[in-house]
Amino acid sequence: MLPTMSSSTNFSFLVALSLFCMAFAAEETACRFDYIYQFGDSLADTGRFSNGRLVIDFIAKALHLPLLHPYLETNASFSHGVNFAVGGSTALVNSFFAKRNISVPSTNIPLSQQVKWFKKHLSSVSNSRSQIKKRLKRALIMMGEIGGNDFNCIFSQGKSLKESRVYVPPVVKAICNAVREVIQFGAVHVVVPGNFPAGCLPKALASFSSADPKAYDDYGCLTESNKFALLFNRYLQKALASLRLEFPNADIRYFDYYKAFEYVLQNARYLGFDQRSLLKACCGTGEKYNFNSTKVCGSPGVKACHNPEKFINWDGVHLTQATYHYISEHLIRDVLSEMKCLP
Image (tube, rainbow, N blue to C red; front, side, top):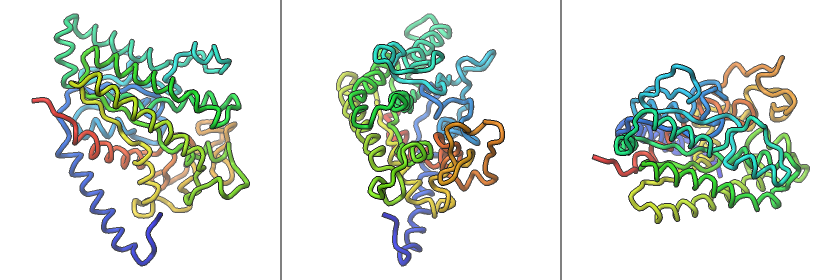
């Protein structure tokens, strides 16, 4: 719950202190990495589904590395890593959906294909496995966020949240298989983010609105959608625990994207966000949530707000640079600063 007005001054001080500590951690306590390899979907795709920098950009800056170029960019420099993430990517392969009559775009690049790109890229850098492993000891692997698009495809077929639970294990298995492959190829430091509270996104709020007040939490987010995200995150964390037993010499970390997003929402007033627009998209059109699935951001006539730094959400699905900045600080403080640094 948000603090009462009588405690707001003290709380504001604590928030400021917390932000200072996060900034200090970002500059001082992260391990030294020479490379970053990013997998995932549009949350990390440098095609910029945002008004500015993404989490991976802030991570690169904190590690004093250049911003990553996408793998398919012609003549790009990959001297310090590669971004394999592609907007719309799923964790599961297309054939999985086809067997269950679930439609996915024919252009979908699943996570397994991104891993193939990863191996192909490193093999082009060196034909020596020992040299590749030496490079990967100095590399940070960001395995996602990914999995959200899998469920977007499933939900679009009319599946309820309850019906969709059966797909959680295979999605998590696909993510863990990707983690397993990169570790077997030589990766040591792997971060696997969970999903954030989808029930707080304008797209979900506009698509699954309910006349029942009990369907929403104190912040106006959809309770059941958020419970589903938490279910997925718990299952993912349990699977990662098993992977740690399988690979005791690897440093596999879970990043709580849900908790980081929740922190921003709960403390939005003190972080500079507009209290009237916490659940609205900056770029979009529509009434309550400024989102319309038939006229999304980028469509003719759809404009962005003039003050995106005051918005948590960019286009109904993705977040603004300001939000990604705070989320990245949580990642740096809670995960990267705790990783086992190699000499």
